[in-house]
Image (cartoon, rainbow, N blue to C red):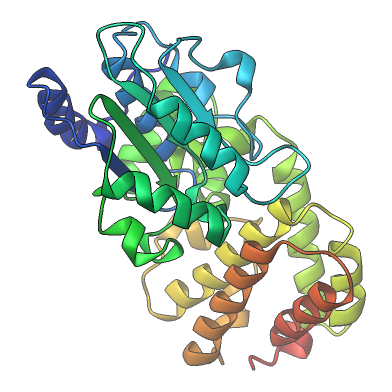
Length: 326
């Protein structure tokens, strides 16, 4: 059983009080960086809305993109929406099914409760369909949306939700929580790989990602030394699940920006998996680096396959070729 982490407790106290007073909002948007506990916080709230005080929050922390339906709350007044396993988006048909569910009478005393995650992958028709429900919500219903950022959703959706931003906690807080989960692990390097996000670090440790990250870092070193070409590395990476290499690439560029600005602490600089950042940051073009972050985010949003994705990836990897920062 995992309790609500300390960096989520202030918001949890405020919203728990609203639940107790039956003043909880009809729609709540939980947003923030990946791996900070957005879904964990959503599940904790769902447990209180439905009276499920013994809900195991581990179900909200899968290593992959998808929640396991078998591990979710089995309650007649709860429903969740995520992309189908073979899809990248949430369709209007699925949102219509959800709306029909929210309009039904509750089986028990609590509200009809629903979770949409990740909300930013709703198609435009799906988002428009949901907007009508947000404008005129059913009386006894609560809709919780989890998204990467407010900007990833239509402003009309955002404006009709109470917003809760989940931040990346301080490094000391993150490490203290992670030591509670696995006291004998060395959390510094894994936490760096997760961009400082503790739930993300916990998931990474349980996967083979640290070994993959070493391979990604070796490829960057090969580019810096002109032993590899951007096209060759892009071709190899394009055969891997983009949910694996694109977050790592985003964190890599972010670390270079932070290092160039003097914002990276000592144990981050010594992390072997993110090694080579000092050399790579000496001629860092900050404006171009932020442009790269936008392009990486766009690739993460589209998550398409084929030549176009590979060409975009080749362009981004070119920033390291021969040690030249574009």
